[in-house]
Length: 180
Image (tube, rainbow, N blue to C red; front, top):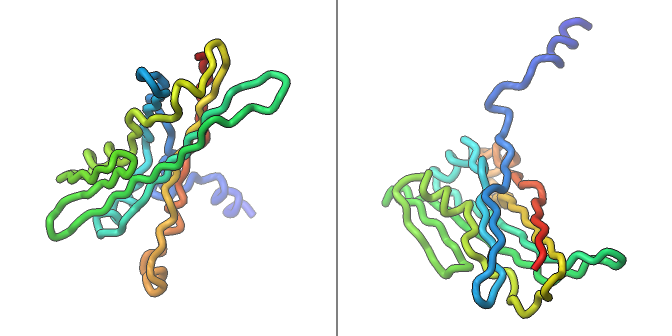
């Protein structure tokens, strides 16, 4: 019984502890006509994910953004709901990381994983809603989360890439309250 107790008290090996992805650097601001949101996801690439990307597996981040009007004695009213996807893939022949940012209609090429990962994990100035949908003096809340989509591989590769089950990363929901 003592060996079992000691085994349970030992921490798991470092490689078994995946980093916990989080959303940081959140900024809610406005342009002349729109409410804008900026944020970045930190600790979103584990070593297993980096290795899989370097082996040419296309990886997708999905970002969920919701805007609510906060009301005291009634249900909060949803004003906007946005889903964004970013894709990253490595070309072994060209030695280039390609990051697709559909919300900006851009496909960017990078020579290193650090730069590609930064572009992949940042939301820059996304238009959440028009300012005409907000009323002066009211309280609002922007909620956001990010997840690394589960990879779909051909059936025979499920036996080779057993680590894919570790790819179910997502952040908690983060929220920012503000008054317009």
